[in-house]
Image 1 (cartoon, rainbow, N blue to C red):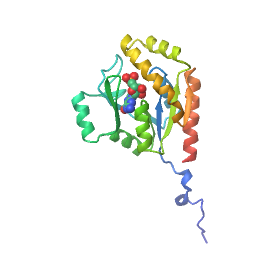
Image 2 (image 1 turned 90 degrees about the horizontal axis):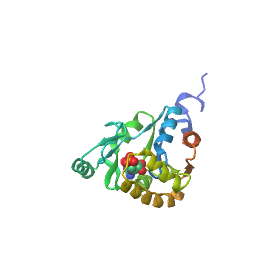
Image 3 (image 1 turned 90 degrees about the vertical axis):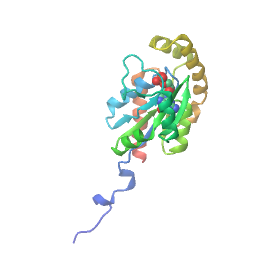
Image 4 (image 1 turned 45 degrees about the vertical axis):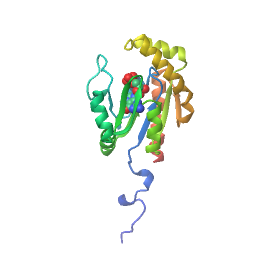
Length: 204
Ligand code: 5GP
């Protein structure tokens, strides 16, 4: 006689189901979120990033659909009215928004999805998706942040000053996040984020 047991394939405990998760990764501009996330994705192929929409101009080397979907303010506004965004904000004079279809589409393929977004958007996503894990990437200190923003050479002095002012508010809110990772060394910071993602996967 064949007996049914808890180890039968159709009786997996819920903790073993492969349910994809959402990770919100936030932190000031220049903290190195992009570099850390790129290293994480190299180590964890099931992790992808949600590509946001923005009205800011593409920087040299950026590509439509890879870093962002670049939109006019009018197209962005139409999307906002139509409910296309999970959240959207005005940041440093430009609009940025997380596209619902982008996140849902990537989750549907079974991948874990990272949203790389600023503080106000991170708060909104945590309200909308309380099961999301929120990670704050912090710079070692403000002097290093200024140095990194200047070294990037992509923003005007005025834009850098604006981003540094916003950074102060963002760093003050780090305590709201589930985890804070100080990015002194990108490889080490990425290893910490990898551990956070793996831990979350175990806990689902
Ligand atoms: P950047 O212009 O440097 O690419 O991005 C500026 C800031 O906007 C960064 O902190 C970045 O994480 C954030 N950001 C990018 N996409 C989104 C988004 O869809 N929503 C929100 N709230 N912030 C975003």
